[in-house]
Structure formats: C-alpha cells, structure tokens
Image 1 (cartoon, rainbow over the protein chains, first blue to last red):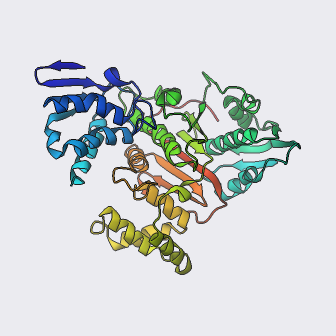
Image 2: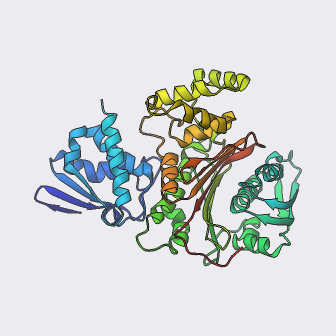
Image 3: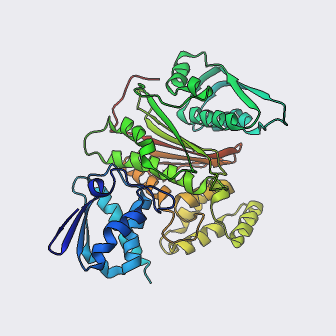
Length: 110
Length: 331
C-alpha cells in the first residue's frame, strides 16, 4: 500500500491477500468486510482518495466485491464513489463487476 | 448396495438419482450392533463427474455415522476404474487423508463448513484447470468464481445447524476429447428448496399453484420484489414457467436469479446469478441439482425443466467450461 499526497494505492493481491475470501469476517478468512474496514474506510475517513488495484489477486468472489465496494457506498453514501477508483487493467471484467455492485448500492441507497 | 449401468446426474438423471438414492436411506444401527455397508461398483459402465463426487460425498457421510463400516469394490470397466482411481477413491474408503497431486485428469478436495471459508483450501483445483488457459483469460476468473460461490453457498446455506456444519466436496476435471472441463461442488445438506426464504404468503401461493398448475402468482410476486415488473414481457414469463414445472425447480430458479436467499438483506444473493452470467459469457453451462429438481443454463439460457425427479440429498452444482480450455486424452 502506498500513500502519496492525498491518494492511497492498494494492490489487493499484494497488500491484503492473494486469495480474497467471502463476505463477512465471521464466515470467512480474508473477507470483503475485513478489507473494507481495514484498507478502504480509514483513508476515506481522512478525506483521501483510494485507488484499488484488483489485478494481482487470484480471483474474487462476488460476495467479497459486493461487501467491500457496495459496503463502502452503504456506509459513506453515494458521493464517496468519486474518491474510490477501481483499477483492473489486465482483468477488466473484475472492474466491471465491482462497479456494478457500487452502482447497485447507490441505486439502493436511501 | 448395487450400482449398475450409466450413471450420469445430468443426462441420465432419473435412472442415476434412483440408483444413488440407495445411499440416502441408510441409518446407523442400534448400539451396540454394527452394520457393514457394501458398495458394489463393479457393474458401472460409465459415470459422470457429478455422480462420482456424489458417491464420494455419500461414502464420507456414511463413514461418519456411528456403527457403520463401509466396504466395496471397484468398477470393472477400465475407464471408469481409472476415474475412481484418480479420485483416490480407495484411500477415501479407507478414511485416509485425500491428496491426489499430479493426477492426469482430475483433482478433488473436501472441506467442512464448521471452519471459516478459506479459498486457499481449494486453490489447487483452480490452478489445475487454469493451467490450461491462455494467460490473462477471463475464464480463469469464471472458474475461480465457480468454486468460490458454490463453496461459500454451502457454508452459508447448506446445513441447518451452522455451528456443527457439514462437509463439502469439490472436483475439477480437465477437458477431454468428448467432454468439456468441469467443476463440480457437492454438499449433502438440506438442499436449496429447503434453505431459500419463502414468505408465508408465497408458501400459500406455491400450494395453490400445485393445485391449479399455475405459478404465475409466485412469478409476479418475485418480479415485484425484484423491481423487474416493467422489464419482462408476458410471453417470456409464460415460456419460462412452462419450463419450470415443479416447486423445487421454481425455488432453484429463484435462488439462481438472486430473488431468494435465506436472509432478507438486499445485498445478498449475488453468488449464483454472477455464476450464470459468467458461464454465459464464456458459452458454458451451469447445472443446478437439488431436491426433486434440476435446472440448466446453457449459454445463459434456461433449458426446459426435466420435471419432478427422485429427490437428491443436498445440492450438486456442475459447471461446464467450453472453448478455451485445452484438451487431454482422457475418458
């Protein structure tokens, strides 16, 4: 994880786990909830932008992606989307999936 | 307990289910008596990966029952015997730790839902299939998702007593000259129809539908809850429900669309829909077997239902990956 200026870069496979798990801590090792609470929320609370690179992990379950990225929207509100950049240049499908959960969470946000 | 002929849970469903259901009815003897269960596999002529894994899971279950010893023989047909050998079946019957590295055609592993969900447990299955993919292929993600979603579903929904939990089994088999690469995940839990959430109103509607053979009301309710009422035309609805002709099949379909999960959380139920989408993007197939039903999505399309079948314990998910995986000369 690199922290420069007002931007934090997170490589999920390198910084968190090569094999990310399921949704919640109580059910899974390397869960989406753990990733969100440990890596995404602290810099976002400090007003920083996070750049999350999904390329290097072996794979992602949909529940991990939903809890990590959809969970951020549910917690911080739709406006946080502008400070959460998702990158997956080698695996564009991962980015599409993650963004889908972000958009769904925004649509369901009350 | 005799198994004969062609066992294939996908293409020879009813015959295979009747045959495999012999394993369901065995109960532990009254103490201090002991019971020997002999599994006679000699006359099996063909077997598909789903049936093989189901037998492995059942042998595992029986061996855990108090007072039961499991014994048996191997199929005489050379190709079937090789298949069982590569699955490490003999060691499995002897209750030795399952490890079968460097098998030519398949990899098998098992885990228990009482432990935390941990993808490292089955990473070697993914690696086994992904080794034959072009670098950077999206199919690798599809395979990863397949194992991940199904095993996570087993953790979350398969067993009523979640603390005690139960085992899951997973198998990866490479593509061969006459069959695609496949991933199979089996649990012997309560099954999807018993684990999806149905409201009391819907239960009433299901019973009514049984009587009048009309499932339209359930469908309308599902669309209303999903906010899709305006997006699907009536002809498509009629066609769909002509395919889904049992309640169990409807439950499988609803679960696979993410319209029903065990909980009411809006964000839940992402697993099976994601799997079907991913499989359709790679022109693969998803077979979902549970209760009295089996439903199949081929290239993203729901195929006609096979009707009411002999009940199957737990859930079997079989995914077929076509196209980009390289072949090996195997059965």
